Amino acid sequence: MLNRRALFSGSVATAMAASSLSKATGKEVPLDFDPRGTIGVFERLPSLQVESELEFITGYRSWMATSLYRQASKRSLDLLRLNGIDLSKDGDLDEIVGILTEDHTISMVVHNLERSQEQFWKLVKDECDRNADVLLEEMADAENRKPGRLLLNKDLDVPDYACYEIHIQPGGYVGDRFAGHIYFYGTSVVLAGGNQQDQLQVNWARGVPRPADGKVKRILDQGTSCGQFAHALKGRFPEAEVWGNDVAGPMLRFAHMNSLKLGKDINYVHELSEKTQFPDDYFDIVTSNLLIHEVPGEKIKEISAEAYRTLRPGGVYYPLDSYSGDQVRGTAMSHYNAWRNYRWNHEVWWMEYYHYDLAQAMREVGFKVDENGPKGRSDTTRNVIGYKV
Amino acid sequence: MAKSNAESGTYTVDYFKSDTHRGVLLKDTMTDNIVTAMINMGAEMWAYRRRMLVMEQLMLERGGITPEMIEKYVPSETLMKSWESERDRFIGNVYDVLARPADIPVTAEMNYTDPKEKGN
Image (cartoon, rainbow over all chains, first blue to last red; front, side, top):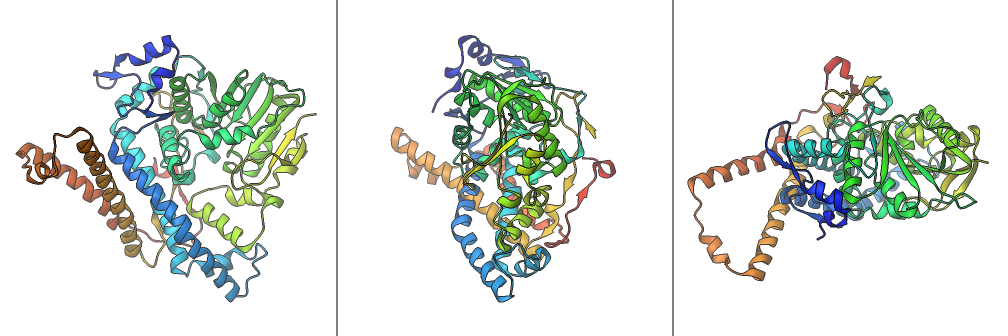
């Protein structure tokens, strides 16, 4: 086990290791609240109880993926064939859903995904609420500390499209004071516990191409949420000034605090990715990591246009996400899975994204587009990349 | 468009509450809830098994406590009260879901509770 304070610069370490009086309770609280220490860059949850419960759900969902889900997939294909559905096409969604929801094994998959997800969100949220005094104090204390800056905007108008409980996360990205904590620990379950050292983001960042002239002075990560991809970008391009923006204040407060603890010099700004504070031609690289599918189609285009505006000529746009539009293998099963994700994972904009032609939208705002860019996520073999020429 | 709740320092805003918790995803509401309780029970059981594994390992490495001492241990009244409270939390965590009301069929259109109507 590694105490992350050892990673800090001396001044930050000294400051963070100190205590202060809680505004809420008047009690002494540590400014770096990690009662159970850290494992690498991963700060353990305050209790073994909740950590173990999450560990169980992680294991249960892995079992589902290899056992229950495999059986359900086989049954799905059999049932669709039996009902005369052409498996090679998207088909009529209502008809496909009607057929598959009648089956107990398939229903069990939908149920288990949904209910286990509700439970791990609840466990993390409850743990945060139980430790609210110190966690809030810790975030408040981190707000004005460096390295990195946190620019919050109390007057930001948060658009309705961002105010849903995406992934059935309680309060979504914007509605809970611990949204960053909840997302950070919850997604470690979704990713089967295989991302506690941000391994996925580090791998994804390796796929980000440099501009042709090789110069990378500034990077923006759009919709950075709790900052894991921004961390990976800083690791890949240590010489660059890295910014992360997001519409969700609670996410950014967690992101900045976490960067501070890790000694990562990253700046965070509370703003809309479609309307940023940055001047024209400012960045060498603009990225996003799983942002695009969380917004409506017209916003995808606006976000792409803003990336184009803020990139300098020769700059690279790397919107990392799942396949959409013509990239999707348009089969009956992919259509059903998209619906299940939309309806019961509460991915509010997923069906729009499923049909959305991201590459075309990027072309329309000015990018030269490569649809066969370096591999991004594990469920893709290539990624759409935009070049500002 | 919602303004950030900056006054409290949390920068949260109102949100649309999802209806997924009301879904009837299995044959009926009670079947749905019982299977959920089984998953929750598994998590609780594993948490205790996990703690036990840590204890057994520490006993092996450091000595001082034996399995027999654990078997014969008599808790004080105060401790017993505290354990009862923990037991009740366990029961709530596993079985509260049995009382979850649900009325939306799995094929229902997506719906939300507007924060302007209900408040979140």
